[in-house]
Image (cartoon, rainbow, N blue to C red; front, side, top):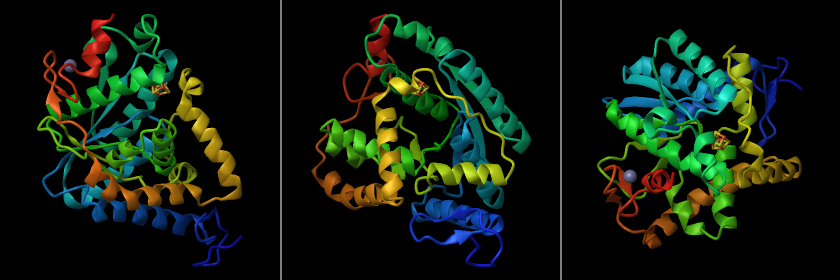
Length: 301
Ligand code: SF4
Ligand code: ZN
């Protein structure tokens, strides 16, 4: 397999057009695609302060590297943080890798834990809850990411969500009978605004998981490749496995799902009647109800 641009040995074949690329041209293609997404969706403005949520795994580590590369041209402020759910060794190792790349790039880095913020680690909370681990974990993480990004003065919160994640999100909503929720997805998140919400941006939105891994490996970016012990129990994991199967027959299926959803988002948004975003009466954070999900979870403990 040869690079279609220069004829050197190829390391990658584009699932959408079957074109092969060598290491040099793959890196160029990858960066151009991410930076184009940032520009097209106006993710980063000149005066932004960007918080990057980083787990130490490949997606967020590559994201931090690319945000650093993008902003070093334009001078926006960047800091990174990891949310520590208290999941033993898994999170400790992730933090090691996250801290290492932040230090290497000279980026301010923080760790915020469920234990310090909520009084309990995720495994402690799960002893009292019948809800699936990832559901509780996701609610607490989204809450803490938004709160900490805002408290540190961020105007944007960048996350490492990639094409696979977004395709999974779309299918999850469909299979749960909540297609209208797909209106809330997209490269820049938030149908409705609340003064305490920090806009979420997803620069890796059109990049699939294998491309991220290849880019990390070709650039010598170190990342943690362990997995959370709760992952395999989640519905999302089953959808991931299902999509892996479909991709063997149709390598471009992720793009089809995500691009298809982008086409219907404007229609869904027109009809999206979701309630007004309120302010939680207990903690003061944005919430769809009088008492937010997090305060409800914590009240039961
Ligand atoms: Fe949390 Fe689930 Fe991710 Fe584990 S796999 S960190 S429980 S969301
Ligand atoms: Zn609350």
